[in-house]
Length: 249
Image (cartoon, rainbow, N blue to C red; front, side, top):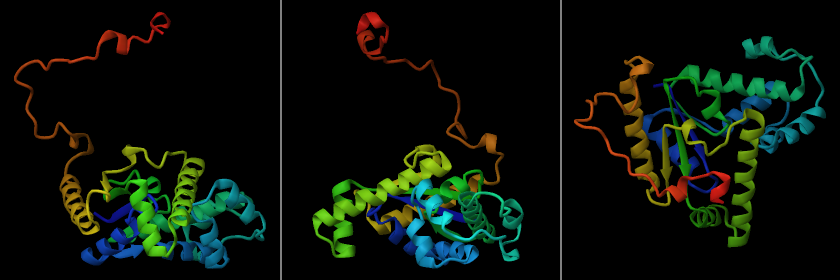
């Protein structure tokens, strides 16, 4: 296993979990560092890159439209070939971000928080994808404590960040952020502590690593199971609950 990606609802403790996990595994943590790298490749300030990070496609396009267009530096290798300066600035930004994410993954032993890494690295079997969630009120309390905000301010910030992240993934990558099929593991920190979450991710990492030696078609819920002894029965809801014909309305 080379990478753990962590997607998180704002205020769920996902960033803190990523930091603790990286420390426990002695892996490299990639979070705001990735934004700084993208900023460096674009030739803009880190603050400017942070302002557009995880925002909507339109926001990114408007921001980049104010930047001068120039060829990419040779330092980023294949990304320079993928994104000639004639292409749109928005596409250029996304290609550089993808290149940085993939290069970090290739280096191995990294915990990557956000940056649509669960989508960019979705096709790789050597990556564990984790989603951290929590009830809204618990997240509001977390943000209020960590950022020194009152309840109203914390709630506004949580809702803004959730909306921005969801819109970004949907607009740029055409995925719903809460699609369960993007993740190997979803953890509710309204139930489990942050340290328990770290332990659970470690166990999932070991479990997915064991499956790497198997062909992809042999990995799944049927692995190691025998056929049912008899025919399973079907308990269905009443017909009036399943009948969708016009006459039933």
